[in-house]
Length: 249
Image (cartoon, rainbow, N blue to C red):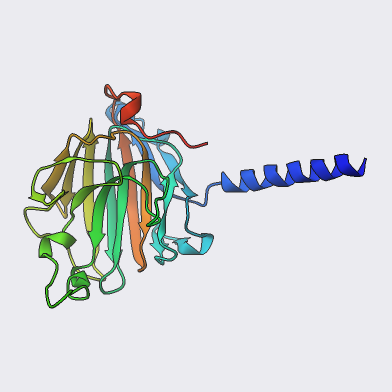
């Protein structure tokens, strides 16, 4: 009898732990569909739920005004509840620290690698002062690095519109500095991403080897704020199993 009770206790503890692991860490942003927009049924927008991958509950704070503050530590990501394939993402963000580093991962597996970040296509969000704080052997990183670069991460590769090595750089520098809000509009369709920075399309990639997956928000050591996060889902394409991230349960 004691052995049976002990086994039941272990099972209940495991179930409770699994349930906690699967509970949303916070709610932030909204998701709607292209069909709803064209039909005028805006009331069907849904709140986005985010699940912790390898950060902590203290990393993220949803404010009363609906904005989200990430303190940057520990380095890692949270992921969307479901996977997305074709969609339009609107997000506004600002860094509160000089040299702040963050980003959004598109079509991600949401499985962290040794550097604590997952695969996917990263939409870079860097503060302008980052290059002055990362001088190596007297050489500054290129200014293009902080202006909305797009690049494949992990085993995900892409073709770049504006090559800088394996990354795609913005053709015009439009990012504002620390303490100022920036607006990204990101169109993601069939392995193609086009990025608008503060009202103008200036960057893009194509032929992403992974074109369906989770959306991840990144914590990378500095405080960043997000607001007005909105996803509009578009009709699906012809995406094979090999071109989609594995589902997480």
